[in-house]
Amino acid sequence: MAITVLFALSLNVITGFCGQVSLGHAAFYGIGAYAGAMLTKAGWPLLAALLPAAGLAGFIGFLVGLMSLRVRHDFLAITTMGIAFLFVGIVRKQEWLGGEIGISGIPAVAFGREGLLLVAVACAGIFAAVTIYLKRSWMGFAFDSIADDEDTARILGIDVPRFKLWAFVIGTSGAGIAGALYAHHVRYIGPDSFGFVESVTVLAMVIIGGIGSVWAVALAAAVLSVLPLWFQFVDDYKLLIYGLLVFAVMRFSPNGIAGALQNLKRRPR
Amino acid sequence: MLLKVSEVTVEFGGVTAVADLSLEIGQGELIGIIGPNGAGKTTLMRVITGMVRPTSGRVLLRGLDITHWTIDQRVRSGLALAQQIVKPLATFTLAENVALACGSRRMGSPWQAMTTIDRNLELERARALLEMMGIGGAADDYPSEVPLGYLKCLELARALALEPDLILLDEPLAGLNQAEAAQMADRIASLVTATRSIILIEHNLREVIRICPKLFVQDHGGNLDFGPTQQVMANPKVRAAYLGEGAG
Image (cartoon, rainbow over all chains, first blue to last red; front, side):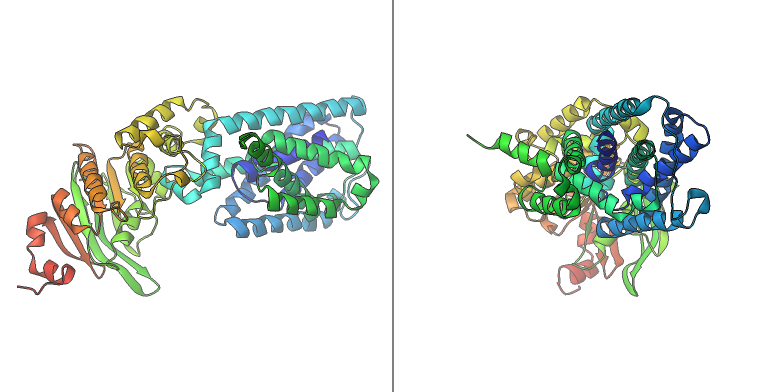
C-alpha cells in the first residue's frame, strides 16, 4: 500500500501539479525496480540502493522530459505511452536484465518484511511531505500556472521548460524509489510488471483522488491498492472497477475525491 | 536605444506578413503603431516578444541581440506584453495572477522557486498594483467573476508587475466603451516614465493620436511612415491608406 501511495504521489507531481499527462509512468517504476534489484543482488543493502535507483529513474525521466518539451496535451500522452512500451520492449530483449523471464531471487531485506513496510511507509511519508512543501512553495505556484496555461505562464516570465523538467525529475525519481521497494517486496520482477496497464492504473488513482491534491491521491492509492487484497472480486475485475470509477469521477466530480469534498464544504446550508 | 527592430521580415508559407520593417524606441517613449487589419501589427509585436521567429532581420534590446531568445528570457530581461485577447490564469485570483508576475524575475531558477515559501511580499505588491489600476476590490475574485474592463486592467497590472523597461500593448482598448477607452488610454499614458517605454498597437485612432507623441504606420506588412504624430497624420499617403481619404 505504502509503495503504491509513493508511486501515485510521484505521478501527481508531474500530472497533478504541473499538468503534464503521463501514460508511461510505470516505466520509471520499472527502472527503479530493476536498478534496485540488480544492486541488491550485487550485494548492496536496500537502503543504499534506493538512491541510485531514484537517480537512474530521475535521469531517464530528465531525458524523457527533454524529449517531451515540444509536445503537449494529447501528443504528450501518446509520447509517454510510447515510453511505457519502449521500456517493456527493451527490457524483454536484455538477457542481463533477465529478458522475458525477469529477475528472480531478489534478496530478502536484512530488516525483514516488517522493516521493509516501515521503510516503505517512511519513504511515502517523506515524499508526501516533500510534495506538500513543493505545492506550497513558489515552485508549486509556477507549476500551477503551467498546468493552467503554459503560454500565459511564459508571458509572465516563467521558464516553462525548466520547471517541467524539474517536475519530471522529481516525479520519476519518486517512482524509482517506489519501484526499488516494490522489487524487494515481491522479490521477483518481470517486464510485464511495469507495462501500460500499470501506467494507466496509477493515473486512475491520481484522477480518482483528485489531480494535484496530495492527501486525496494518497488516500485513493491506499484504498485502491488494498481493495483487491480484501475482496477477491475487486482483484478479478480490477481494471473494470478502476475504469468505472474514473468514468464516474469524470462525470460527477472531475476534480476527484478532493474536488467533491471541497464542493460539499462550499455548498450553502 | 532601448529596442531596435532591424530589417525584420516574417513569412508564413509564402505569405509575407511583415516586410523589411525597422523600428527604434528609446527610453521613456510612447509609440503608437497603427494600420488597417492585416497590416502585420500583431505579427511585429509577436516578433518583438519572441512568439514568432522572423524569417530574416534582428531584434536588439539594449544592444543585445535577442532574436533567438525565448519569450520568458525576454520577459525577464525587461519586456512585458499585454495581449489583445486577455488571457488570465483562470484558476488564479486576480491578485495571484499579478503576484506570479511580481516574483518571476526573482524566481527565475527552479531552485530559487523551490526554496521560497513566502508569497506575501508578492501578493502585497500585486494588491498595490491592482489598487493602482482601480480594481483593488476584486483582488480576491477569479477572472471568470469580473468584467472585461477589469481583465484589461489585470493585463496592465501583470505587465507592470514584471518591472519592465518596455511594455507592448496589443489593442488594450478593444471591447471597451468610449469612456472606458479614454480612461484606459490616460492610464497607459501615465505609465510612461523616464525608464519605462510603451509600444501601443491600437485601432482606436482617436485615443492613439491623443496620447502617443510618435506614430508608426504599418500597411501591407511594410512601414508607411514613422515620426511625430502630427507630422505622420499629415502625410497624404497615411491618410489615403489608413483613413481612406484621397491623397493630396
